[in-house]
Amino acid sequence: MDKLIKSINLPGEIQVVISVIVGILILSTLLFWTWGLFSKPKVLTELKTRTKSWWLMATLFLLAAVISPIITYIGIGFLSFAALREFYSVIRLRRSDRVGMLWCYLAIPIQYYLAYMGWYGVFIIFIPVFMFVWIPFVLVLSGETKMIMTSMAGLPTSLMFCVFGISHMAYLISLPEIEGFSAGGKGLLLFLIFITQINDVMQFIWGKLIGSHKILPKVSPNKTWEGFIGGLLSTVVIGYFMRFLTPLNDWQIIIISFLIAGVGFMGDVVVSAIKRDVGVKDMGDSIPGHGGVLDRIDSLSMTAPIFFHLVYYFAY
Image (spheres, one colour):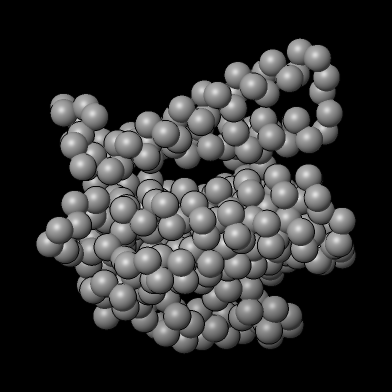
């Protein structure tokens, strides 16, 4: 596909998708602004919040993609750091867990360096194997055994959710080139981010339009079966028409889009459950008016590894 802007070092497919996304964001922003002049229902506030989040993500992706691939690794690594920091600010940890937390933070640059180097074998086992063994032992060395099971569960889970899952987004950039597939790792990353986020938007819209049957009323009261199913089907259709960003065939892209929709929902409600347990509305306030980083990437923390490994299996 020909480039829209020759001077920008991005494949034509990615330029087209970014142009469409920016166009949709501009139209949405103008529409919601006009709507707000006549009335200000609660749903409008939520739509504005989601639109602003999309603007932020689209801008960050474009800057990272245009400037340098290294910026992409650093940027996603920073998201892991911010998410981990938010996670530790709300869960109940002991004073003696600080050394274990330090090791969790130190795991971030190591994990992203492995992604940058493309060392798949070590990348895939560093956190779920080595850190899973090391962190509990570090906690034991403190000599404090009261509530140690909670810490042994919380710290490794935080690594899996905030670092291991999200780091798969960075590794997409390190995947080797495939002949005839010009979009490359940046195209795969754009597809993952777009489909994960559009699924969230579609579930929200369908839920507001026709939603009446709650899925998990005690965890996330706004989630409905109608919204979930409507979002899932919409995501599969959108994913099918965006398959040119991937090296996958028709049935593979349908399977992956279906799973992204389902797993994205899982990531969302898992974080909702954590927030309800600790009694907070948002995981943080890193993004003024929009909650924390983890509130924005909760779905990606689960869709990223699923997407990465399926693409790796199907195409690499």
